[in-house]
Image (cartoon, rainbow, N blue to C red; front, side, top):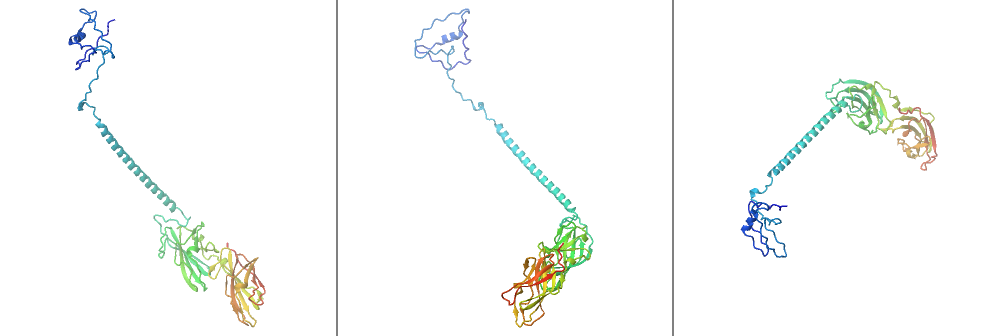
Length: 425
């Protein structure tokens, strides 16, 4: 087998020569050229080279000459490439990155603006839809509710008058409902309203007593519609009760539907804790159940503290001394005649010993006009005592209790029968 061919010489021979092995001279150019130009065995003109002188052994193995098999190529000097040959940084990448960020910001801004516009449009559309629905349902409410809304184009209705002429006594004030008027509005009603119409209740009020009644129509007056809806007054001429011993006219306005059936409405007087009185707003309503009921008992008398006491009349009423009775109660007014046949004056306070017994309950008077001094030898002294009793009571007893302050004041009684004490309906 022939030896492997020698490696081809470099196109540019190196500018340095390999160091000669120890104790050996560097080869001359002749042998080096012979090595590159010598013939191989088996070729014509091949002449074998003479054997080389053996190299003495040293600490390091001999280094084969450059170009021979096993030779180690020395390190190449590091050459710095010129600037134009160096790899340049990709400048287009920064530009693209900047453009990408800008495009993303623009897209994000467009998305935000579009979202805001969409949300605003949705809210506007929903508001318009809700307003339209509310207006439609309110305008079509008919006669139900106390605040029926006026339509966008209200239809004016002619003023109509309905006579009533109903009278009763509330809180000791005689009140007459003269008539009611139904109209779109009234010139003297300055209070704005969103109702379809107004129902005006014209009143005549008479305080025949010397008492001050304390009430407010805003609290005690309600209009009851045919569907039992309760409506408070929208406006009024006078809000409180008339002065003692005075007469006046008054009006109350209530918001109502334009198609309200006036003949099936009623005016309700009384606070929730009071005895309620209803006035049907129709011509000449029957209000007799609210009339005071008076009887004149016979032999309703007794002797107490040396004096003769006689009950001359009993009156059951819904109000007394400027006050309306409480719910489920009535007032009983007892009128007394007192005679003092003795020769001594007698002083006392009727509230200390006078009671009204109903069943097992005894009630003191709520008010009294009985004199506090009875002169000796006087007769026909009069005075009233007012009590409260449950509605529907038909029998009671006047009790005069024993008092240590009065001589001959043993307990005395006067039984009474009440002819009429109607319960409220």
